[in-house]
Length: 261
Image 1: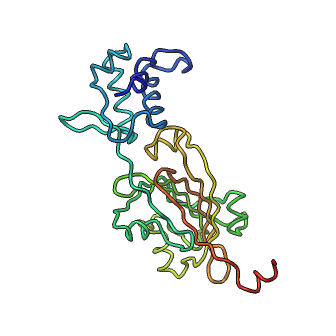
Image 2: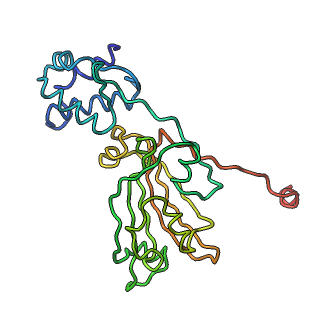
Image 3: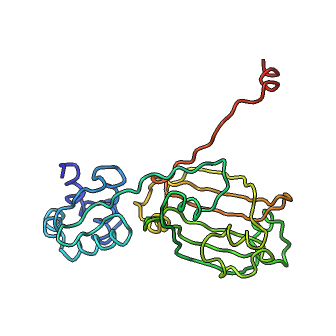
């Protein structure tokens, strides 16, 4: 491990972390080193004893910091081998010209997709949901929120809202939302997406198993039926280190080009 990497342990007791417990300071130092590329995926960490000596902390403190990072997906422990920086998943290329579900995207790539559910319920709509979905104040909205995972790597946090008349029982959605909508004749045929860059806060970073401050993508999607009616309003946060969104661009037709000359 380089001298620069060694500093992540030797500076644990330095000031500037607002009196945080030592295990939190050590955890943050390791996260920052991963985020900045000072230690890379696959790199081995020193032994628990060596880290305790370098950081001048107890082995209990080291163990607590490492266990938190393992739970967060930053580190992995291999029995008999030690602790390593977790490998990064190969980047997923997503076309912006096709409207498909996460489950369908992953299946097409041969990846096993699953979800960890946060919410599947029916609620009074928020002002934003009323405006986007065209709901009145006495109508209800169905919400589903989940962590999307492929090959055991968390990729996105997804929160979808639909009129409860379209999805009266959100608990019936066990996999692809679009497949569930297709069964009732409500699958969208087009959508408008807005994508913006973000740095992940503590809660989102923990769910996505990346260091706090990692690059992410905020994606807001409004989906439509063939009739032009809005059917779905989804807000998602994607890991920036695993997704590439690709759009095909074409020149305008000959008449358009001639008008510009």
